[in-house]
Amino acid sequence: MPEYSFDLVVIGSGIAGQAAASSAAEAGLSVVMLEKTGSLGGSTAMSGGFFAFSGTGEQAADGVHDSADLFLNDMVAAGGGVSDRALLQTYLDHQAETYHWLKDQGVVFRALEISSGQSAPRSHNSVITEVLTTLHRNFTSHGGETRLNHRATRLVRENGKVTAVVVQSPDGESMFHSRGGIVLATGGFSRSTHLLRTFAPDALTAIPYGGKGNTGDGLKMAWKLGAGMADMSYVTATYGSHPDTGEEFHELLTAYYMGAIVVNKEGKRFMDESQSYKVLGREVLKEAEGLGFQIFDAKIRAKSHPGIPLNDIGMLENIGHVHKADSLEELARLAGIDAAGLVQTVARYNASITGDQADETGRTNLCNGVGELLPLDQAPFYAYPAKALMTTTYCGVTINSDAQVVDIDGDVIDGLYAIGEVTGGFHGAAYMTGTSLGKGAVFGRIVAQHASANLSPVRA
Ligand SMILES: Cc1cc2nc3c(=O)[nH]c(=O)nc-3n(C[C@H](O)[C@H](O)[C@H](O)COP(=O)(O)OP(=O)(O)OC[C@H]3O[C@@H](n4cnc5c(N)ncnc54)[C@H](O)[C@@H]3O)c2cc1C
Image 1 (cartoon, rainbow, N blue to C red):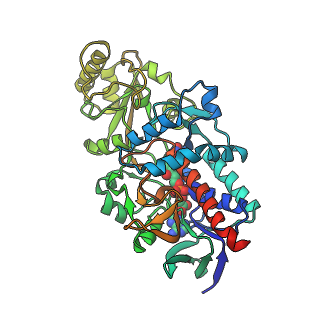
Image 2: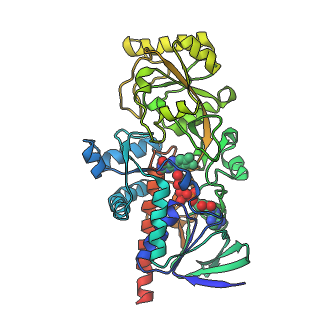
Image 3: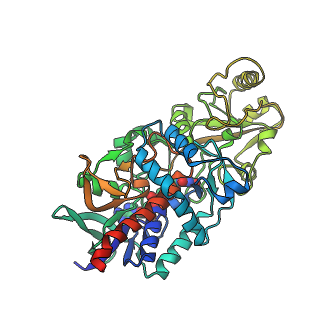
């Protein structure tokens, strides 16, 4: 079989793979990036483009008070206290450097939003396809090589060290050797029925989503070598997508973080809507038809943010996905919700805001402990029917702060790195918006720096 040799072999071309490959090529390493599908980008290319950073110029310009400590507390809380603190600290230690590196390459953060798991606005929105194009241009201009339709199938370990990977392409099998390490950046397994059935059978009823190539190949290759695993029991779908959401057009609305409530077909609320949309995703799957309707009024409709994913109500109204009526009874009829149930629920909700009565779900704020609730009392009223979308898995192989894969006994698997969604331990029980793209970029940079430092004596 044909054999090739590089300083670094990166498997996967999403944000994690591109950040590692581009940074390593910049550092002078010879790098190949292998991608199993016919196009670059994986789930990253389908994403909302939010990166979570604190202490940025965008936050300062908006007068946002945030800090690394607050960010850490939020991540620990969002993760239910089970995240690997060393990985969170590594993220915080490297976020500024990564943010500036992205900006230096021309990445533009066009909006700043507060979203799932955040108690200060720290979701920096980018046009993610432009980010990927920018990184790939940088990679190529530094001599990096890309191979599409190249699927990594097996890691080769010699004397305890991972030294090569066997790859399947339309031309047959080939072997890619690496002097500085093999990097698994293969994404999650939202497209693997087999792995979902093994780790998260409930999620099989959610709308299938995520990059087409995200079938857990990297997880399985590392598993075979004895890699540890973390967060496997927390896989859940994300709440907030219209039932007609398809491959070509992804939509997700988080009107609940602007003040909407979520009801089932009986018009009843069934969760505290201020929680992470991953937690909401788990709850909505238990409801009839897996449906939760986001109910809001004119005040919340006015908070729509045109052009910004998750917040653009106007665009969803234009494509006919939002019901609108002058009364709650009429809204219920249009949306297929029990009218009496909806009217009672809204009355109870409003009374809990203006009166002494506690909220029936325990909700006290808009999102993650902040923001004042508003009564739903100003016509017209709106309903957005939404289901849970199986976007991401956020769990997988265990790594240390240098992104080296660690086996089930806690020992480093020499020569093997893992970054991005294929890794576990970082998010814990639930994810904060923007930390997955952020994590891919941060740990991608770390791999490049680590591999480069280890190779320098060899290259000198
Ligand atoms: C709709 C949607 C919206 C999202 N919005 C956000 C957001 O705004 N902010 C945020 O932080 N996160 C968001 N996420 C999550 C985030 O996009 C992903 O977790 C992240 O992009 C994963 O990056 P990655 O590089 O690890 O994997 P991916 O981007 O999925 O890339 C993995 C690549 O590896 C390839 N691959 C797999 N197996 C092999 C193999 N054997 N050989 C070669 N190649 C292989 C795949 O084909 C794929 O191209 C969103 C996800 C979705 C689906």
